Image (cartoon, rainbow, N blue to C red):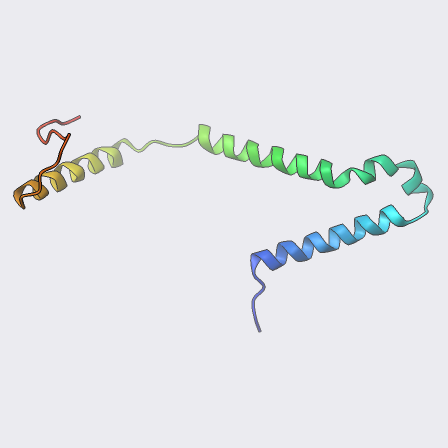
Length: 102
């Protein structure tokens, strides 16, 4: 049995929701007549709310991003080791000072 990909999952859900929206818009019930403008713009409202949610999540993750001082120091040491190793092998690096440490 084949597994449904995420794209097919999203497209299936979107098709069902869009179908329900079209069915609601084209029906003649009293509910639709009363709420016609809101139902008509429901996809736009949903898209706006999803965008707002996405921006909120991104901003939250940016502001709570942890810096790892130990990893930064280790990376700087590895860069210095690589520069020294390349210099021992005869590679000249322009614009770098091997003796400088941060």
